[in-house]
Length: 216
Image (cartoon, rainbow, N blue to C red; front, top):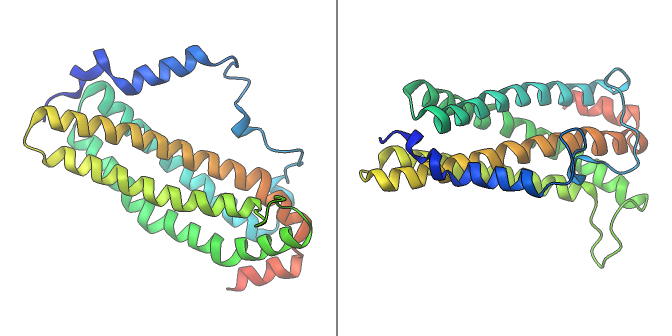
């Protein structure tokens, strides 16, 4: 495969990032609205129910793997494709299938259903014809993450198999861009869960109900 460093001159991923920085009116210490939760006071880890702490602990593991995945993407972008970088990417997708998928299924089955029910009962939803709660947004992000992961996996896989070098670079570039989008999606999803869903759960789900989640 042709060295990806040759793309750095006209790297569209880098150009888009630079343009975003030029357009932004906020500093790194002033995050965008996506990372500004509504007026909810986050629950300290020590005060969380053990069930929520277990989810938060899994989030920490996921974030660490996202950091390694991001480093691998950056390494390919800066230094070209190596056997080591592709092995790390393969490791991430194995982790995604084995751990992230299991984590999201656990949330959906044990946590989201009851939280959605309580939010609707307490008027914590949109005012349209079909009420929408924060749980619906989080479930949509689960679906998007699964779809995004499949796209990244396929793009990077095709890039390694295409015989034409120009096509390899185009596909590789697309895979890197979509991979970084996946990382941001998962980070934002975890942020929303811990700063919005966990806080709402403490308001509307009882200790006995949380205890039951631990036994399933």
